[in-house]
Length: 107
Image 1 (cartoon, rainbow, N blue to C red):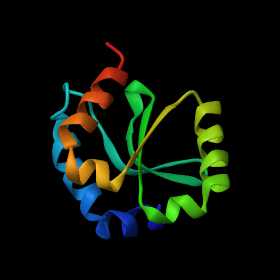
Image 2: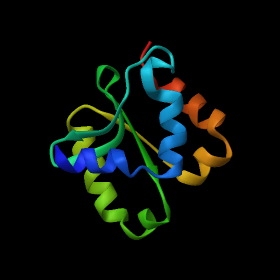
Image 3: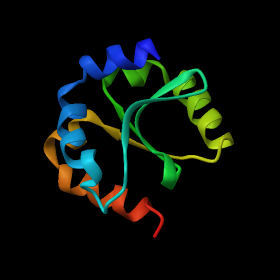
């Protein structure tokens, strides 16, 4: 998907920071994809085998709560679990973010 490729080239600093910890099976040997398309939506990070999606939200998400709710409902209808973190959480306490992600991975 062309848009996903564009997003991969223009990641936010928080996405870059989290991706360095998720890429290449670095977290619990789980394969994550960044900017992964599911239906008409492009998720920030997805672990397809774990049916887990991680979304990073900046300040603009406060103004698009309805869209985010519809998007989350769609992804959940496809069997995915969705975790949301604020960019600030990733930038200030990535270890806590990773801890929450690990708690939500299937064993």
